[in-house]
Figure 1 (cartoon, helix red, strand yellow):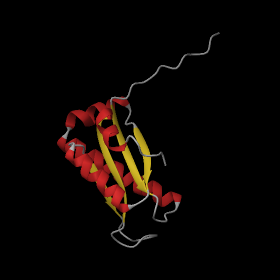
Figure 2 (cartoon, helix red, strand yellow):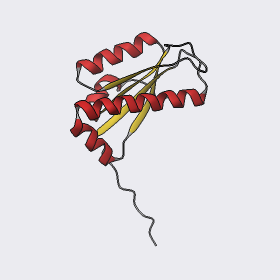
Figure 3 (cartoon, one colour):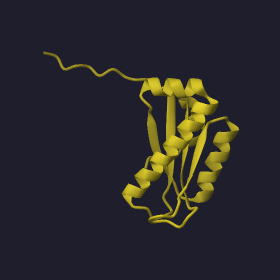
Length: 127
């Protein structure tokens, strides 16, 4: 019996989560912050770009997690994404556990067309 061939999936819509590496967070905290960013950005897309959100949901909600080294880099990405009309979700920690209140930890971009998101994050390294 031949092994089943995997079908290549072309993701037309994606969501990117960008996490700051310059602040100390436990892995669990980092995961929770990434989840916050995903929900915030998805809600923004659902409100402003229903078609993008719907297609992303149908494709399986692709997410890519990336990293930056500073708050300045993160904010520059947010500005560029907003200029291109990409939904964003910026996460500020509440300060209940590991970080001071108001610490900006990560950014969610999209769901949006993959080629559009790649214009903003295409050169960032994976987390």
